[in-house]
Length: 196
Image 1 (cartoon, helix red, strand yellow):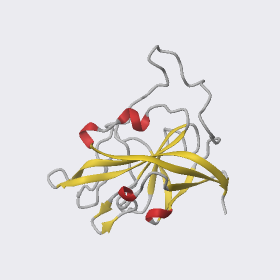
Image 2: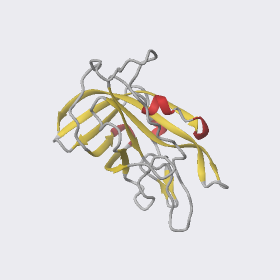
Image 3: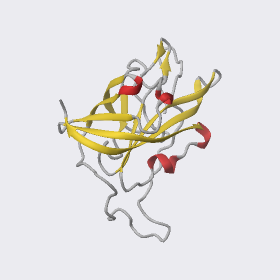
Image 4: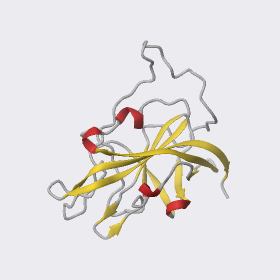
């Protein structure tokens, strides 16, 4: 996941390869037909993410993959935008929906600068195009080296409506113009309500 400014300065989420993961168990049986755990919503595009504890209220745009297989992020010219990995499930649907945002840019803190402050039980709301708000509750978070990114934990199959929030973390590597770690927050759908 990387972004750059016109000056070539790279302040990025790092190289996170998006693996093609299949919904099969160890015996090779297809698990995609199993009943979901908990509430799930029909697919609908996310429009905005709100995280009250850290003061985030940000627009969401679809992102895909770069040519090298890494996850795209919103451009650094829009540091307060969040990217939704559009080749995965949308927030609220069964599976692990992925939202990414910059930690900072050349001017200072960006949308996910305070992501590391989230704790178990905190709320993340995603306003969707279908007029619903998907409400998620944080389960856990972790900071990992980009070289040891937990691809399966982030993108792998889950039977509930999950959410992954990802940004940079750790120390800044000036030679590579990138942070050394990623911070990942894991949450699950706990409620849905009409948008106000």
